[in-house]
Image 1: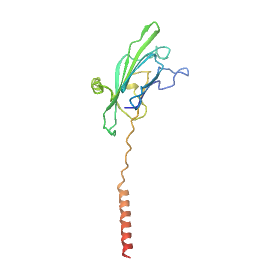
Image 2 (image 1 turned 180 degrees about the vertical axis):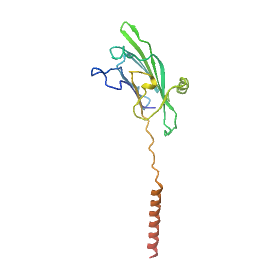
Image 3 (image 1 turned 90 degrees about the horizontal axis):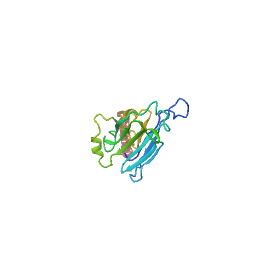
Image 4 (image 1 turned 90 degrees about the vertical axis):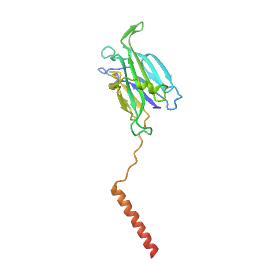
Length: 204
């Protein structure tokens, strides 16, 4: 899609109250014009943003400083994706319009301390090689229908406390109401009555 919001954040409170965990967060907004560089805000450490036409790659680190669940509930390492598809009501038909890939590394340590590397790729349908990239996704990659609202894909991406929400600009095509048979009958009777009255007036 041309306007995507990708937000990774806790679904509950963000650690401001004791007893609630706080996870690192990220927000990606892809501009509808395809010209403006996607806007990215995040508290991931060592944040690097690499934009390209209709796609963006964000890398960073989850650390004990930006996630209180770092030791108790780290994100499971590995690579997984989720596909976003247009609903059948889309003018272009039901099709894959975007996919999000999450790549999580093992917990490591360097001179800055402990960290878990994170990479998120958001790729939309106008990006170079999009069809080939979708075809190369593993069999069984989960897919969700776009609604145009906020959609949590944490389960699909198995991101644990790193809760990921996707929002696109898909706008459902409004349904045109079809008159009920009773309504059509009443309208028809009204037209017939007006026609007969007009004829009577002409004959008077």
